[in-house]
Structure formats: C-alpha cells, structure tokens
Length: 477
Ligand code: DMJ
Image 1 (spheres, rainbow, N blue to C red):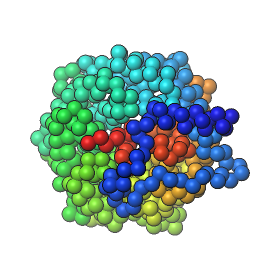
Image 2: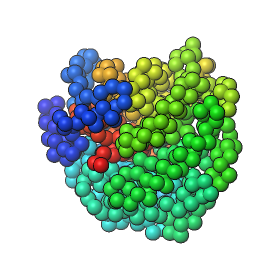
Image 3: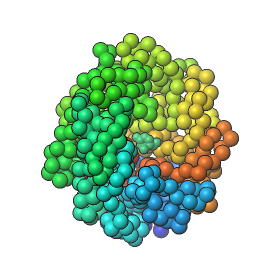
Image 4: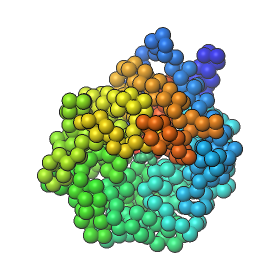
C-alpha cells in the first residue's frame, strides 16, 4: 500500500506539476524570493516516531479525505457554491451559482494528482461559469477565491479558457476601484459595474495585488496591477505616525473609523500581501512597505505573556494595548513570519497557536490569551494554523511540524467529518457541528495538510507564492 502510494504520488507530481518543480538554476530567484535565508527543497528523510505514519501515508490519507468531501459535494451540491454537510443540501452565496467550491478546489485536485476529476471539473467550469450576472458581489472574497483560483488553475493546466474567465472577471470587478481615494468599494455589481459599501478594512483593500497583478502579467494589461497597487499604497499612506493601521476605514473620505490595530481578520492578509507582492513581483515599494510595517507590528502588537508569545490589539495612534485576543485567523502569522525569514518569532507563535488548538481539542475562532478562555467559540474549518506548520516544516525541517499536522488531521476527522463531507463547528467546547463547509476547506485546509506531507519539491517556494486562499501563483515573468 505504502509503496504503491509513494509511486503514485511521484508519477503524478512528475507529470502534472512539472512546471512547479524546482530547477537547479533557481538560486538567483530563490535569493530574491527568500529575503533572509536561502530556500531549499531538501528535507531529511521523514524519520517518523513509531506511532506517526510516514509522509506518504499521511499524504494519501489527506487525499482520501479530500475525495470523501468532494464526492459529497458532487452528489448533493454539484453546480452550486457549497455543500451543506448536515442537511445534504447546497448553498449559493448570491442566489445564483458562481461555482465557488469547484474553482477553489480545482488546483488542489491537480496537485493531488486527481487527473480525471480535475479535467472534468475544469471543463465544467469553462462551459458553465458565467460572470454576466446582475448581482453585487464582495470584491475581496471573489478576488481571492475565484480570480485567484482561475489564475492558479490556468497556470497548472494551460487551459486558456480559465485565463479568459479570469480576464472577464477582473474587468467586471475593476469598477470597485473607482472611488475618490482609489481604495475599493466593498461590493460591485458584476453586470452593471455599480458599486456600494464605503466602510471597509485593510484586508479588503490590501489583499488584491497578487491576483490583479498576476492578471496583468498574464494578459499584458497593466491596468489591473496599477489599480490594485494604487489602492494598497493609498492604504499604507494612511498608517499612523507609529506605523500601524486600524480596523475600519471609509474609502470615500480616507478617514479611519476604528483605530484598533491587530493582525487578525480584517487586517491579516494586508500584511501578508505586502510581503508576498514584493516576493512575486520583485516590487520594491512593497518591500519597503513590508519592512516598515512589520517593525511596527512587532513593536506594538507582539506580546510575550505568561501563557506564551502572542500578537494582540493596540491603538494605532498611541500603541497602547487595547486587547489580548488571538484566534484561528491570527494563526496565519507564523507562516508569514517564516516566509519573511523570521523563524524565531514564527516558531514561538506557532507553539502558542498549537497550545490554543490542544487546549480545546480544536481551535476556537478567538480566545483571550491571558486567561486562555474562549471569546468566540466556533471553528469554521479554517486552514491558517496548518498553513503555518507547512511553511515552518519547509524552512526548518523540524519534525515537530509534521507531528503537529497529525494532531490537526486527527481532530478534523474526529470532530468535523460527516457521512458526506466535513462540517464547521458552532462550538469547539461541545464540538457541536453546523451545516457549513466553506470552499476554503478544499482550497486551503486540505491543500496545506497535503503539502505538509507531500514530497517537498511538489511546490517550489523559490518560484511560487500562495495567494491568501492558498492558490499557488508561479512567477513566469
Ligand atoms: C480564507 O478565505 C482566506 O484565507 C482569508 O485570507 C481568511 N479567511 C479564510 C480562511 O480562514
């Protein structure tokens, strides 16, 4: 069984994702993409402790769980955005389907070597996905899930129909940037280009450049890069004198309406994209903005508490501590720190996040790290803590992270698995399930779990950057 799986994985990776595999000439790019240390795909042979399965066995287990959830989606929700894993129904975000789960899940299928399944899904998307819809969509969510997914799967498959869909989507989303400041409105109507939603946050403004920038590079239309970059710079220019951003801003006036600073949901991927846009596009402005921002974040938000090393909340203008909560979304930050070369903080923070997970058997949406008491008790099948374990294993080669991954996988199977898929939890204390399986479970949670155990050259991190929805974008420019 093990030998067969190992062969299967090698063959599949060799054929399908050859363009992602590291070339020996990658050192120059590797140095640029890995600012404080050189990246390498070498990993010591997994000397698993006796009770931990081998990497190949773990990768295959994850793959089987993807198949389980995908079969459930196909049986009960095919053609819709998402499966409802308890009622066995389906859910469409905007009343009409935008194929959220197929587009989000397609590149994971390709990386897992599901050749036939991926080809069928790709064909279905190309023939059935239409953005000519009179609906207001959230620019941020549609960009990270659909635009990112289409671009990544185009690069992996070479299917030009996906790039055409991405170009069409990019054009339909672009009116969102037509505000007095250039920072995007929250919603845009895909048919009419009408916009609405002036009150937004740094993540919704600053998490667009990887996708719009890649669209520019692949279509030769600079307008996409320029609009998303302008929005990012306008946001950065409104940082406080001590270098922090707040939680809520009005994109018409440019005024902050909530000065609370943190790295959690609503700000998180703004920081992630400053770093990754530097790495993917060699954009020196983004390099400068990342370096200035991370210094302020580490100075005012990092918190060495009796319970561990965390990042909490502070006032963006004074730096005064205003809160001590940390949660599932914050757990992306060890991965971002590791990618930037700060392995010391990355390791300490992932240890804290792991403590959060194991304290409750599975991580809560948010808790107070001073008291270790839950302040928001759901679990949405989120990937961030697994994403961070993937980066840390890659950069440190420490077997600790493959062991952590086993804990995450076992908890998911134990508490979230249903007969047709996986369900989010409404309460991690009681492990009560709820009728939701977000598309990022296919795009991110299972992909990062798989990559944690897949052969290390499956993705060449010296050439590939993941968008915030875990869609790998390869630098071809
Ligand atoms: C995903 O849609 C993205 O990772 C986003 O950046 C944050 N939230 C979810 C996953 O938790």
